[in-house]
Length: 592
Ligand SMILES: Cc1cc2nc3c(=O)[nH]c(=O)nc-3n(C[C@H](O)[C@H](O)[C@H](O)COP(=O)(O)OP(=O)(O)OC[C@H]3O[C@@H](n4cnc5c(N)ncnc54)[C@H](O)[C@@H]3O)c2cc1C
Image (cartoon, rainbow, N blue to C red):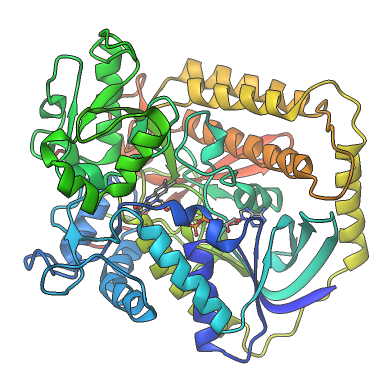
């Protein structure tokens, strides 16, 4: 059995930043990081537009309070405000720290870090490295892990969290190269496994964003919080769905419909193209529904609208957003300096996840959980029960700084601020603790049985086929707009697909680089996550942030200003609710 003081699952921004902080705070600890990809191929590397912080380099009137207010308003008042205060107060110092590590941010003419406009932010506060910000940050972080001697297990797939009596004791992992299984015991376990965009058929996310960490936590009895809030990014390139960064609109691009109108004037007149993502995605969907979309052959009434950069000029496009130009050129053959880009909303980000406190420790239940009513004159604070030795940060976690809708450039920030805090909390937590007792053989045997069961199946269904059907169900039954009937029928179809999963057939029965086994395990994760999303969404009978119900079109604070906690069991999903932490901003109507 392998042993480490600390085991971190996920090599993206959150996991890498946490590992670095443990190593800085407690250099004597034996720290390991596991990733099913190579760490620098984590989805964080694809982040484009930037990372928010009120550095005041461009806009001296900015400060952390303005950033906090924008974030809470953007969240449709569902964010926990204590967590938002920490996020926005610590933002400037984490950026300076990244710069000291060597991250190459884009500059102002006087040499200070440049900052651009972003949706929902009232000041120009998004720091960036052209439109390759994630790449610039992740490479430096991973370099630093090597410098600090963090042990990296790359291309190991973590299959299971070992959790006994509400204490995390380790993990079980599978080596993608040769099928070797290992149990790892540790004093602290951290999940930084990213999002689940692959649950949908059109997404900006990479192939590895399959919600494994969420599914493993759920299978171990940990609730998932606010899973109904799925972010649709307004500008996915049609038809592929890959992201065209919000930085493009931050630099001044327009959204236009088939009539050539800048239609955002009808939906968010004060913010136009820089309204928050939930509002912009709904506006695009409504324009397309109203027949003001465009067809690939130029006819009106089609499935996309245009993102128009032409007025920016080639020079600005090539210096500020060269990667977005290149994507459109490479994938759909468009020169964006000459022609508008075809775009429509694409699944992008998970606001929900594994609930944690502001030190990154995982919450298993709340003493005040239940079906309470929100009272603005007497808001209650959550009293949470924590899991011993289990931590989470980044997109897999829900601390919750994004509430019902995340603002662009706040996610990289969350990964770095909460990655750092969680790393510091872990370094503190493991002091003086012993390695837990783990029955290695029984966990190995269970994992072997699980793999054998997959290899031994004689059904007639291909993984790809079941996955495609599942992604189609999620896309058509849990989209930008939702209703009870549509979601209920989606949930019924997922139950049928879960039965079909028992009949999938693997062509490859070997152990060397058997990527079909990984795909089968990932599909299981996706289906668990999909069921959690739909069940949570069905029970939130209001519209808030990214969760927009045609049958309950208003926000309903008395009944739903609370976090959903969804508990998985094979028999079905149990829901409970947890209070939202309100410190300085009372809920108001959200208008832009
Ligand atoms: C195209 C794109 C552009 C974006 N641009 C921006 C932006 O400009 N600004 C911004 O703030 N946000 C942006 N975001 C969002 C942001 O990039 C992500 O939310 C953030 O990077 C997530 O980081 P993470 O560390 O939580 O997870 P990830 O970077 O997704 O890393 C997850 C890690 O977990 C590992 N893992 C997962 N499952 C397993 C398993 N079973 N076993 C072992 N390892 C596992 C993976 O291998 C990987 O190393 C963007 C997102 C996308 C998709």
